[in-house]
Amino acid sequence: MSSWTKLRTLSFPEKRLLAASVVLLPISAVALRFVSLRRWQTFLSKALVRKRANKSYLHKSALDAAFEAARMVRVASARGPYRGNCLQQSVTLWWLLQRRSIEGKIRFGARKDGGRLEAHAWVEVDGCALNEGRGSHNEFKPCDGATVEQAGN
Image (cartoon, rainbow, N blue to C red; front, side, top):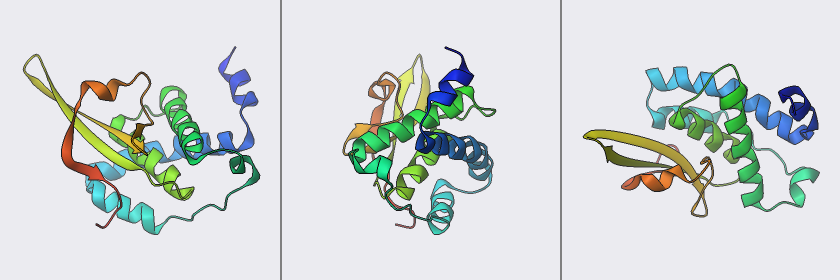
């Protein structure tokens, strides 16, 4: 199935999530180069307009809605004009969840690979990693105290 065919099969709320992701990924990339994560989240929180629950979300649990948002962020990053890294994708997903009054946490982890220290970021809701394709966050040891729950705290 072509990308255009897949796009046409998305529901209207999924298309809105995808569009928001395509726009916010490169904006977050630029913002994170000039300001800290905490400041960017504070800005996003102040600019946040919480969405009222619409009919398409009434039948879904918060976790199902969160996984749907994560999927749209992954699609935007993989198929959109900007390929965001894990932190940019996590910030985008965090903001989309906040808009839907779903409390997510940005988590950070690290690992050593052949003498190199590698870091990774992901979003969790109720202990479930959302923006992970095949559980790659499990390869990273979560950094204690390296959770961003709410901007400004």
